Length: 170
Image 1: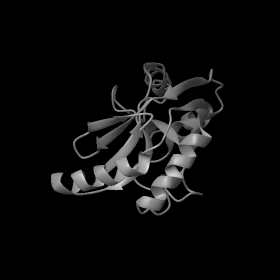
Image 2 (image 1 turned 45 degrees about the vertical axis):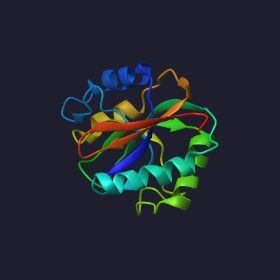
Image 3 (image 1 turned 90 degrees about the vertical axis):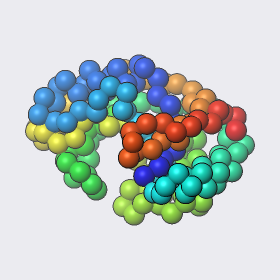
Image 4 (image 1 turned 45 degrees about the horizontal axis):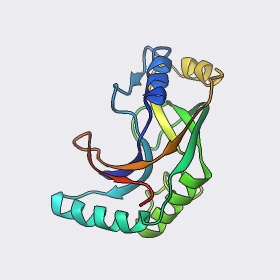
């Protein structure tokens, strides 16, 4: 699966790693693997990826840098896929939601996860483990982290690595 993601500052990945230590039975995201998905783009081989990237670059054209803010810790009690619960950093950004909406017009939304009403911008901290520990972490107050998104990353989830980047304004 390919996706278009927001680049994360080290302060956000560091926070996610610190909070994951409070969920010892959960599977934490390894350092360097935290993501903030704008939109999943689809599957395919290298030739299919080239077409997906070209379409995505057209859809992102005209996008100016925008602000994103991590505001707290939250949880999906039951994940659409994979182990539950999913503890995450909650993200607020009207501009990110608007960009996601533009991409939903261009690429089919993943049912139950990506429709305009289903999209929950977040950075996963950990999956699975003790639900009571997850609930305790959700109750924790954190200092908000705000940053300006100046680039987006095309990501290959199968290989777990970035494929290319696009700077904003695009």
